[in-house]
Length: 124
Image (cartoon, rainbow, N blue to C red; front, side):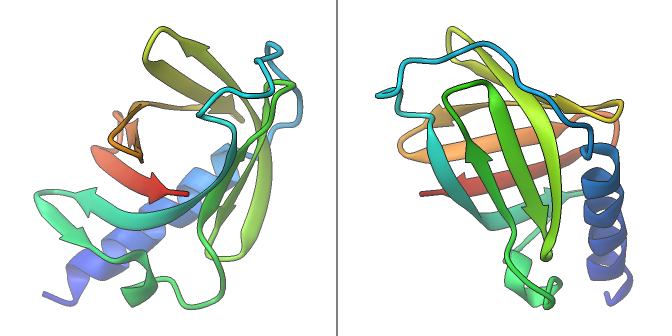
């Protein structure tokens, strides 16, 4: 059972390393509901879900979406910059060769890293 949290931690560290490219995307209306700082509430992978605080102990895990199309991704206190876009209900975060895709529903931002089969859920 101990292997699953370690695997999730390694995937999260890999994700922040690959999302460390700089830059901005398209400008979004300053009142857009996606804007702002989102804090991770759940990490899901391989049919297993847990609170990020159970495996990440060095700092916060957040995504801050900015109106200029840039975003700051922090995983376990490690910060990276990326670009984000929105098309209808679909949000994409890209940087360093990695892509997270997701949507906001009922106040929850769900982002999936499809190649790793990992989903991160965030709330403001």
